[in-house]
Length: 492
Image (tube, rainbow, N blue to C red; front, side, top):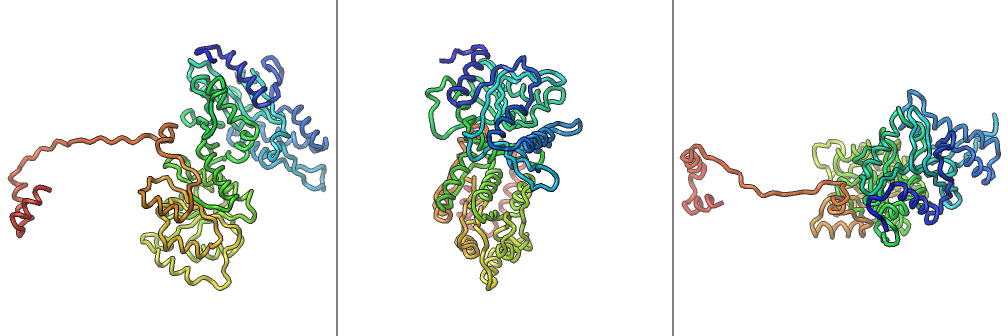
């Protein structure tokens, strides 16, 4: 049982035990007085790579490349250095034994087999910078620091821990230590855990919420959240599949995005489409990004076509994917769409469903008619997944039939966050299939993702300066109407 207001030291002791006994991390001790603590502990990384059969020459070159990426130059920002390290973690380090030798990929993390990695938990890690700082808990994978956790007593707001994390990232403190970090966390026993990434502003720190399971059996919400987010498989999955660098801002997923994509993966595995209904403002565009990236890496011959019905949405989708360094091809016309589908590339496209050429008018029928004249040798190439944005609007019989005509074997996933009338909801499910995942407005309000809507009925006081002129205006406008008709109009 947690005692309200207990010392942070007691909370920290309990959390360390949680990592050791429940999450099965190896405890490396208290590093308060240890010299030369680093975010890349070469000794532990060398041990792990040696155990995987990597020869010494390649290990030395791999660690050199990793240290080079993690070294924060004087004129370099944290975002760019962290991105460079992430790419090495995510895609491996390309090295050669020597000149003229074949390039090999040395993996710093075994993504496919979480249990084959070495997970370490360390406390009181003293980092010397312009001003020495000491993060409460640091998590290492194979000797590489991937997460930090600041703890506060239950009577001190978790926001204090978040601000402490933000201070650590300033140039005058220990910014270079954060170049390898993927998750930055703060927590206490009353509010639980909040998490973000490097340079995440305080108001954007997230709270993890599980759709299944109970907090019973854990001493506090903090322990429960840590057991979910820092479980070995979950932590690797979030780092591997749910981190993006979006035009200067590093981001990770909210719980609704994570579970929405996990549900979509299951549907796709069964060859089914459906609808992801996440309320407006809950990150639907980034859900598309993460799902598209997963499809590309896990589905053979995968191609993704994102359909929208308004120019501004098409532009938004194009800019979002380009912002995360994905080369998306934006089609220019129905003919261009057909031509690209008839080839094996590009793998990622966005297109308007019915507004081509002159965007000032709806050319739906012209578009549909143009599809009746497909080239004789046409067949949509590849394993095509069609994301339909605002699918409640793009589901009329003609439009859906047109899409099905050109991509008969495509798997369609609808995205929407707009409240639907009963008949619209039924129609959406008839066209796209069952709901893959839902995140409702009231859930988003409760999570602080969107603001609640409030309506107030008001009477607006008005003063007529000349009632006589109003009567004269009414008589002039209703000349020719019967007295009965004038009376009924006055009532309205």
